Image 1: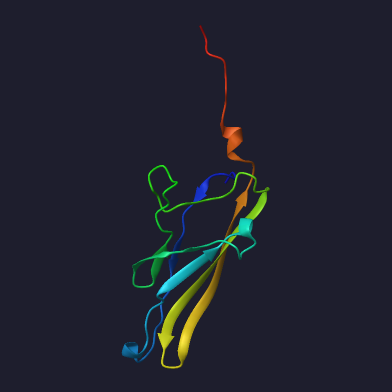
Image 2: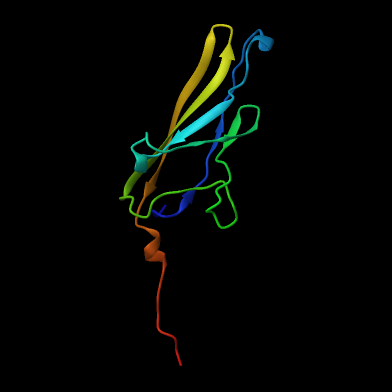
Amino acid sequence: MKSGYGINQTVIGSVSSNQSSAVTQPQNAVSYFPEFGYETYWRLLERMGSGRFEFQRNPYSTYKNRTHFSPIWMPDGAYTVNTWLIDGWTPDGMLSANLTDSLTIRGNLWSDWHVAPLNP
C-alpha cells in the first residue's frame, strides 16, 4: 500500500466456557497506530455483533467508510496496527487479547497523481 491511503479492519474474538451463562463475549476493541507512537491517539472500534468489531465510520472518508488513513509522510516499511480486545468477563475477572497486524508501505499517493497542461 502507498502511504496516504486508508485501511479497514475487522476484529473477531470469542470466549468459550462449559458455563456459557457465566461469561460474556468481548465488549470493546481499541486500535493504536504507529504515527502516534501507539499512545497519543487511538480509535474505539464499533461492535458489529457478538465479538465482531470494525472501525467506526470516518467522517473524512469520501463515502463515510470505516477507514483509517495512514499519513502521507509515513516512511516505507511495515505499518503495524495494535488492537486491544477487552471486556470479555468471567467469574474470575476480565479477559483481554493484544492483537497486531501489518502491511507494507511502499511510496505515497502523490506518485499516483499526474498534472499535465491542457491541450488547446
